[in-house]
Length: 178
Image 1 (cartoon, rainbow, N blue to C red):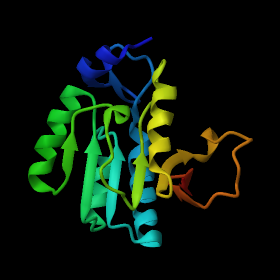
Image 2: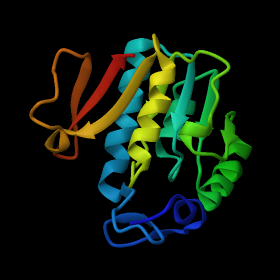
Image 3: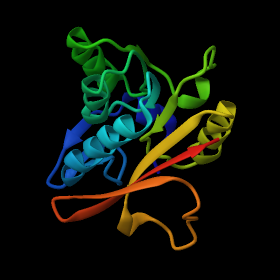
């Protein structure tokens, strides 16, 4: 199991199915997800007209770029991996975001955001720490995009969500008020 130090220092490498952090066995970004998660951001922004977003994780910048295309006025991105953070800084030369190099649970919110967008891979003992972080955002919108095949049977359908399909893959953009 990967440690937080390995996550911070691990290189993002591309393999057959997607991208991996060196030392992590689980894919952090699948190639086939690119269009699907971008479409989810587009649909969210059109439906809810968000102006400010706190985005958790940069990855390859797919969702960050889509938020920028949708005209987000205030965009803060939290990315703990050093190499991905450096790539995000390079990306930001052509965009307008604040990019922070830290884990979500180290972020101390000083403002409210219209949306907290979560696209992080929880690993090891980080799951509880990440959930504690999310709990800091009461009364704010929180969203996470998932392939429908990954949604658990006990997932409530009472929460608002947007179902859509991209390249024969079904997605659900889940959004809830915390």
